[in-house]
Length: 488
Image (tube, rainbow, N blue to C red; front, top):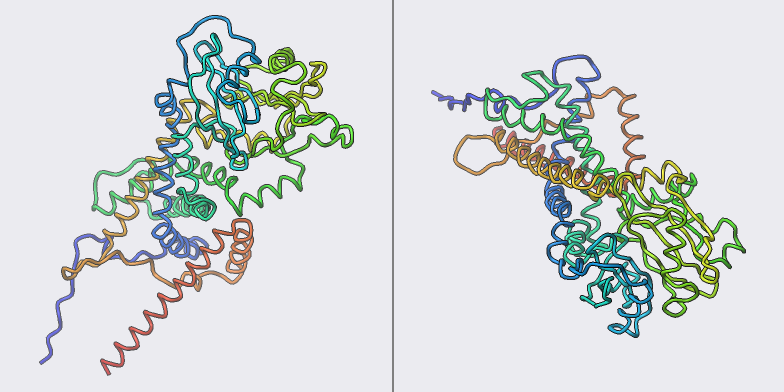
């Protein structure tokens, strides 16, 4: 007499049911298994990279406040009164660093703010300049720090930025951030479609408090993802502009469509030879290098103060950077630095010999794509709307961490519970491609190829997922074949 083993039962219908297509119209029934498979593999395998990006990005969002506290001794001064001319402040900095080439000056903006005299310490190729901080009232040198990028980040903020961008691994490490940015939008979109096209069991916008543990977790996961979707899409799109491979394609596309950011004439001789020489492309944060050639003396011609006065007369307002001439026909270039809303990014070129404005580029005259790029970058960095952007980015980082935790929790809650071995959740059922109509399959293949070309890291990782999926399927077939052979 043969005894049939008792089958394992669970009181949680979500755990017992293998995820599969919802009943419904043909297209939704066909696409849902594929979205489930894609969302499952991408989320499980890419989530660790997204977790690192979320934590480091949230930390970067509040890094300006950290910077102001850590470097308060050089960023601010108690002295009050009229500021010395910029050239006298430069001379004071020169007493501390007499040998390094002078690159630019950032006058203190507002009462109690110090002036930065920026020097070439041999790291301009890495977008680093030595900043000498000068009290604008009495000319006292308060200290020196290495400033990074167009934002002038000081070492602590730079360390956080580089952790977020490449884990302090240099160019190879940038693949991590490109992988995270590439998949963030895909995972978020697939999850949104799954949540809003699936079986309705409560509000889509509010987490439920009843039902099984897995249903409650899924409800939190779906509701949070819905509210944060646009923020995730923004982070993915803007983050890719800094990436190695996708960012190169973005730059090529902008150049082909004449969407480059215009720049003022920095060399009068070159401008006379090529009237369109100022149509350049502005570097992103941390990627626009400083001038390579040393200025002709510290304050040639009208000097830094004369250049600043001319720029102010041309309606350049707020914090600015005044870069010195870099050749016999070079100009002073004065650039507005206020990246909050409304963006102040006007620039003016000042003729050193006469002090006249040789060229002006207004942010209002930027191509629409260049404006969107500027706004997107500043929004990603938490600069566009000041503290509001910072709070929003910190909240997005927290939501992304919560999404990752609840996603892994759902996977754990779906695990087989027979026995006492530690086992992970089951993957989504295979065979999603076979349920698609041929036309839909062709469209998706073509779309995947196009997206893979535009986002190479996404394309390579997607191919790796497919290889892994095939390997898992082959392994399962071998095991079933072995089991059938043993039973026979």
